[in-house]
Image (cartoon, rainbow, N blue to C red; front, side, top):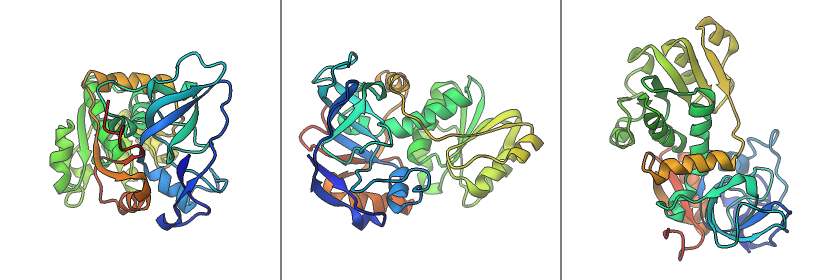
Length: 316
């Protein structure tokens, strides 16, 4: 199969298109013929070697942790899927990734593709959508009428988090540059703060939940807007325990673990229209270096989609 591989840590130029063997199926594995994938910040952080202490790579390595396509083959003990099924997945990070024509995934990490989405749209959802789900549903347990602040609402995780929080009945506040305000409002944000011109902590208080996608001082300042008993959930770093105690709130951090059952629940939100896909830029697989450069620039909104099979990626 063809795949974009890297032979060492480095910049986007380390990618090369190569013909690599497909791994054998385990008894509970499925082989997915990939029609589309997407770029997430963890992809280029892994490529740069920023996470090699925690998640070292074996070279040549295939990155990418989103995929949508059809089941090509199944292992001897697979019961949930059959060849031809349309699916999407966030695979395990310790196996070869999705910047390729085929990926091998344990069946427990796979879910039926929402029939309302194209494969390109579906490929934008697993990692970012599951991150938003775990933060808001599993950890924060967002309820109707709660006030939720989402930092970086124009990003991939932020965009899905805005929609999910609204679907859960919350009032949603987000931070974004002025030029991105129409976009985040279109996703359902009730209040948008231009963080470049107004400190967000001066614009609100008594927030029930903060989702931190930025880290640094933004995370530290977020304690000020939470009401006692609130929760600060970060996908960047563990919130300071002393500050959490001082403000009488809960501070949580997590590294997303894939889960096919949760992905199926998220898929239902797409199927009934409570959440819509947020693919904003699209590249062919061979232009992956350009897609990574764009993601690293921070000048994006929504998700960056990557087409693997041009004849199938935009079909349903």
